[in-house]
View 1: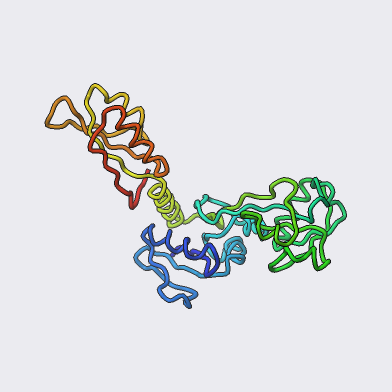
View 2: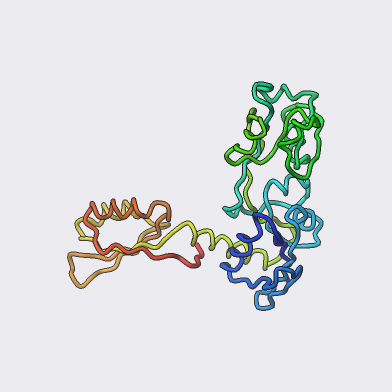
Length: 279
């Protein structure tokens, strides 16, 4: 039975559970459950703190897990990243009082507050900067004002929280993080199935199925707009001068594609969601 670690709370939890459900797995119904089985799919789910998942998977106690790349790197676990899951994006940056630092090398010998000492320490080591890391569990933006650090390293979205604390971003990006599937490295057929299913969910979320009719004389122009993943499906219609075309189209581009198809003479353009896929 495949043992899967799933975030029990936090920003990754709900989306991870939804993604697994779309992949055909049956997780917990009661949010207080810590362990639940899905006998039909031969898997067992363990609901853990996102920060602990990489440790459990890296130890071999669990086979695979869903966590953030930032948490994986910060844990220094031997677990391996298998695939990006296209949610939970975050960016890590350095910040300090305005005008105090212009470049990363100015942190040499200074104090940096962070909730991710493993991640930040490894980044500074690669850039040959030696700084004292002050580990905090949260609200690191207050560290400079309270005198326990000279700068901070934290997740940045719009930067408004840092600006409210009188801090400005400087230096390079530490990490672009996202939710990832990680593995202990132990071979398990169930892990391969899980990966294929999750990849199918990503495809279903990223693409739509587009159907339309187009005159044969404009077929080349239309299929240039909708080349599909490998090749579009083309079917004859009762009118021999027309054909029906079906192709997968990126969801974010579907309206632009419909506009282009209309301009080349396509009609009866329909868009359908994809609920599951294997490519």
